Length: 117
Image 1 (cartoon, helix red, strand yellow):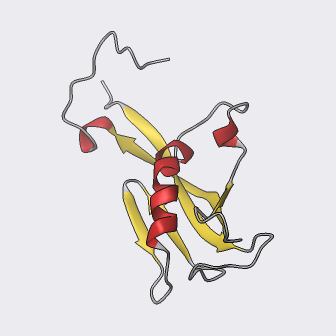
Image 2 (image 1 turned 90 degrees about the horizontal axis):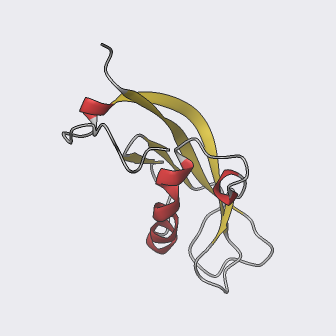
Image 3 (image 1 turned 60 degrees about the vertical axis):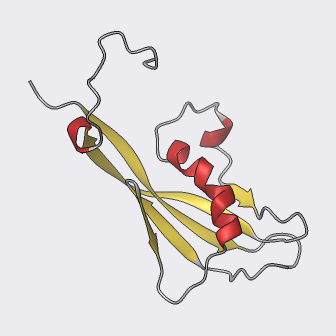
C-alpha cells in the first residue's frame, strides 16, 4: 500500500502598487515565498510585520486546491491592513509539491474522518 499523499502549491507574495500612496514602509517588489510550511524572504528586502500578520491566515488556504466558485480561488490581491495605505500584496501560485502524510503529522488517519469531503 502506498503512503497517503497530498499536494500543496508553492506561493509568492509580492508588494505591488495600489490606487493610493504608501504610508507604510513597503517597497514595490519586496516579496517572500511559501514552500510547504516554510517562508523564504528575499535578502535585503524589507517586508512589513503588520502586513505579514494580515496575510498569514490566508496562505494555508491559498496553498490548497479550491473550488472554482470559492472567493479564495479568485481574489489574489490583498490590501495593506492600514486603511490609509495604498499598498497591495499579490499572491501567486508558483509551483506544486507532494507531501506524504507521515512527514507532516503523527495523528492516525481516521476511517470516518469528519473533515473529509
